[in-house]
Image (cartoon, rainbow, N blue to C red):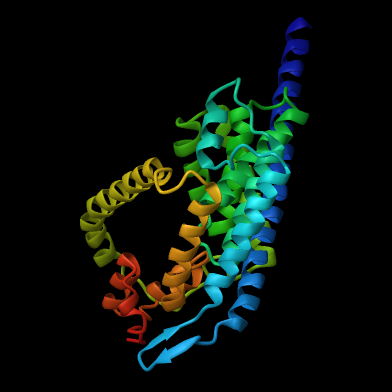
Length: 328
């Protein structure tokens, strides 16, 4: 009799855990998916409206310069500075803060700073700043996961909730549920956990399903007509893997070095931001493909709509090479 009671309790506890995993994993995935779709679609709508003012300020035949990026970037910078100073934010947060919070019990993500950081990224991307989509979506998902964990602290661990949020954000933004699961474990949790993989998987799949329902062609990377041969692609990856790793390390170190020496340019935060706005605005005036989320540019690369020369010009941001794009 005691054994039957014990078995019944074990079955009930198992079903209870499975129910919690499904419900709360799906809840995190649903909330993050809707907010991620809203973030990206909002940026795209404002960007499409911004492009209406993209006529040439001066046209020298093969060189066309538009003053539109400089104007909208300056407006975005002013909004970001005003929000930061008005609402007393010490600094805006990013993916690094999400990782730290997932591994440190004493470091919690502040909801106010988290959402205002997302708002800052939204304003920046809408104005044309090259903030990309990875950082804002990761931080948005981690913040939402952390908020749900505060409301329900005893159901799942904090790092699991944050992992669910990040996986859902990557899954919705890049239409990649498997990629969201792997990214959450590798980059956020830094390990594979049997307790965490089920809710993270549910969250990622639910998020991708909802995003596909609203945007069947994808919210960032639309389906392309390009056909990819498997064997040549795998062979090429063996060469590109180490090369891209070296380039990524150089890029990250350059960012760290630039941040270290940026304060030497001026003690005024406003002037440092103004320098960045002018630099990016001038480059974007000649090469608009470097601005914003960059999804259209990536699709163009996949479909081979750019010459290799033009792509190199985008990398080194050589203004004199602005108008060499053409269809292959």
